[in-house]
Image (cartoon, rainbow, N blue to C red; front, side, top):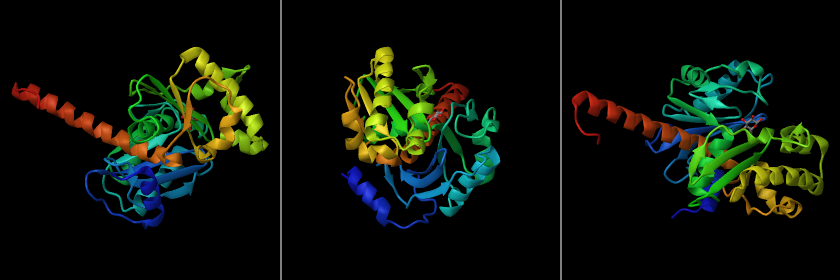
Length: 288
Ligand code: BGC
């Protein structure tokens, strides 16, 4: 069986442009406040099947400009199949309900319809931290974990993907918890750490307050830490004082891309079973 390490090294060595391949391949796009990253993903193995492409998030980060960038990524891979997108906002049925680190004009925009119109491909879109959690729960640090697992992504913002007995509780937005009178994202995201050049110790202290608050309210069984810091986790971990086990994301910062593709796969499966039910109802037969 292929290990994640092998998958990562494959990502580095295999060259770019792949056309639409077999149906197990979905283009995953991870949208962030500073970069938009995409790669084709084999959803059976969690491997990237082409080299990741990263394009800077356009500023202002409007729906037009950002979906143009996503279409550019699809074009780069000559993509004609399904696309899964992880987006940094509350997302319901393709529509954005918040916009913490993107242009406020995203609120009320149907991102799914916009990306479909620009790429001509079927698109599924979910919250970015929810997506990263999907990947870690299926292939990484959360594999086989029951109980409550929180995937916390530390990037431009703070995102949380909350999983209970392996099932996603979507759009939790716990990265905006008020700690010490302020939205924790504005004090302790990786973006703030960079701007303020915080030491590991200082950042760890702020994050300790945050994780202790999550412990106090939700009593999770495991924290998985994602985002760029996951590959430097050893420097941060000694400065976080909590009781709950905490581990770095095993897929490092690729979890967002892989999870976005998995979300599209799940959507496709739901569509198939919905149409099976409809067909069974129409014919009066059994569901297959
Ligand atoms: C957004 C979340 C997102 C997180 C990580 C926050 O600002 O509100 O929806 O998951 O950033 O990108």
